[in-house]
Amino acid sequence: MTSVTFAGVRKTYGDAVALAGLDLAIEPGEFVALLGPSGSGKTTTLNLLAGLIDADDGEIRIGGRVVNDVTPDRRDIAMVFQNYALYPHLTVFENLEFPLRARDRRVAATVVEAKVDRVAGTLGLGDLLHRYPKELSGGQQQRVALGRAMIREPKVFLLDEPLSNLDARLRIRMRRDIKALHEAIGSTIVYVTHDQAEAMTLATRIAVFAEGRLQQFASPAEIYARPANLFVAGFLGEREPVLMAGRIETGDGLAFVAPDGRLALDAAAARHLAPFAGRPVVLCIRAEALRPSRGTDGADGAVVAQVELSGPDAILYCRLDGGAEVVARADPADGFAKGDRIGLTADAARLTAFDPTTGAALRAGE
Ligand SMILES: Nc1ncnc2c1ncn2[C@@H]1O[C@H](COP(=O)(O)OP(=O)(O)OP(=O)(O)O)[C@@H](O)[C@H]1O
Ligand SMILES: [Mg+2]
Image 1 (cartoon, rainbow, N blue to C red):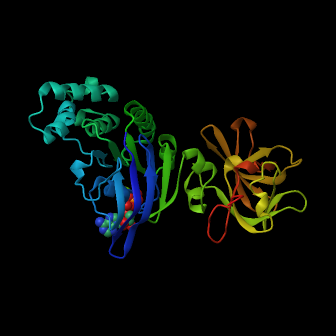
Image 2: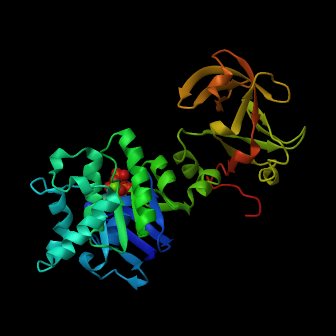
Image 3: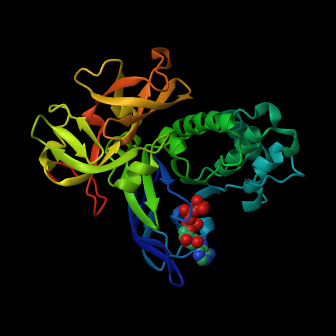
């Protein structure tokens, strides 16, 4: 297992900064997702690590060794691209053995066979070795592409959006396969995606990028529950959170007060917000942070404007009495309907406050 480190790594194209001073330390055996919108520097980071492009500045290490001047084929890495291309005229077996033969033509047939068998076994391709790529499903082709990367037993796997040309269901199944694969082989994996759900389910840690800068590097749970800034808060999660500008106030119990709405905050659950009383904040309110109820007793009053079924949840688009629009998550069995007058209780522990100017998360003691 191998560590990967970026220290002050910078890459520009003319005036355009593709990557601005990246510092990132990946532990041996980690599965790290590089997550961010288009153009944020994910592929640049991966290509720098692979040695396909050179850094302007900074140091890249693989397993402690500085690799800035090491050619790609000597970095002990394997890369699977978004548009993995299998050789159409070669069988699955031949596709898998190709990297071994390309490297050393004299490698013994028995060695090749043993390696192909092992990789095929790990990926469940054992029965497909004699088929041609066109005789495989998208997911099977994807697994062959992964197998081709695995066959040389690289120290680090680099995957750039490897599931992006699969349909939604298959992507979810492949996620599990890739996760199982990581657990089985234990290699360090760096995985580029712009799909936050993919990053959340696969990664041990997620590196969130925006505009060539690393925004946060932490576990999926940490990134979701404690986003470092407004960008991260907005980018993670199945749906965009509601961001509301207002103030934390203490007067009549702790509350978040905006010009067009008010949410009572339970003092114990809102301990992390209380120190910011009196100052303007932007509050990030995710649907699961608001609990709807039939009565408005002890809750803030709202009206259901729209109900959307989302798998096991009913998503309620609500208007607070002050007029502000918020979103709450409910159980479809509770039967909330458009026009219902409801109460909303904020689960304050799930709320994060941000500085309206810098966008940085406000945390007690920081
Ligand atoms: N060869 C190049 N020449 C000029 N600019 C480039 C080049 N490669 C990348 N860039 C720029 O660098 C920035 C980062 O690009 P990068 O490919 O790393 O983004 P990305 O996060 O992988 O995006 P996507 O999700 O669209 O693949 C972008 O603004 C891009 O236009
Ligand atoms: Mg890219």
